[in-house]
Image 1: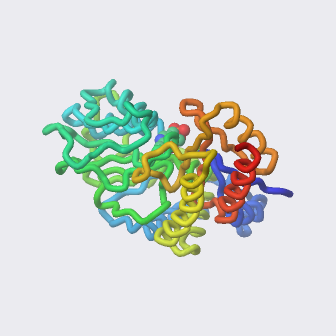
Image 2 (image 1 turned 90 degrees about the horizontal axis):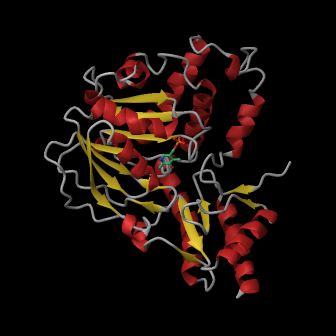
Image 3 (image 1 turned 30 degrees about the horizontal axis):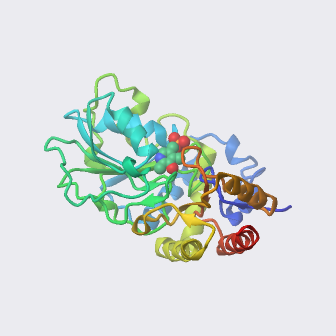
Length: 360
Ligand SMILES: *Cc1c(COP(=O)(O)O)cnc(C)c1O
């Protein structure tokens, strides 16, 4: 068995240890005589898995009692609708558009009310984060929305926007659990887990309890109401049971590794290796404004489409998978999530140096 270094933006690399443990439990989960995949979600055993996952996540992030944790389906994209449907009481919300995912969320919200684009970085292909210290936040805005880490473009909010007292809603799909966060600064923090936490099919929503109300937009489907899921403890209907079980294992793995501050240190170390090389390379260069660089997604180019393609191909042959940039940006992108080992980044940079020497 040979595992490659997988730089995919998502679904993405998971800790090998977690996969091995899941493999061991595949046929018989701890004496139950069945796989977690085959288990009733109403069973005591499964309730234990769900409760433990929530408790570990709460401990990791430091989620206080006045926030609910929901394990839902529909991916991050379903939240683009669920957020306005549940939160747009005045039918007004402000969006900061820093990439395709934020843009999609903004467009979706426009179906339900007045979604104002109060800042954008589209003028320079989303290669930076706009100054959000004094934005024209709408007086009647129900919330201010950001995509905190822009997976496609490789930018990250290093400071949260000044929302002037309005509720902050953040899509953290690609930076979830990559560093410590102060959850009390957010009304809603959500993300699809397939970037940094688990298998596709689960989306985690951490939401302040006062935002969970019956007062939602008319005709909001039952399944898209936060209150339904919160009241049922994420068991209103069959949850993505196996996916949640894997997420739970990843929470335990992160705790064992030292928690979110250890993750941050590990991620900063990895990112520095790659960015330092990009800054000194005569062939490759990063595409993002320095102060806005993501620790998770690192886009880079050679300046020649032919050379980019040749690099991606050669890298694949050498065991570095999924380095091709997003179709809307081109070039390359190395996603170096929590589970990417330091050695993977070191070896990638060694390989890039060799490629540079041969192609200058
Ligand atoms: C991947 C991604 C999405 C979309 O996730 P789905 O689960 O496929 O809907 C949304 N936002 C961000 C930041 C992402 O990285």
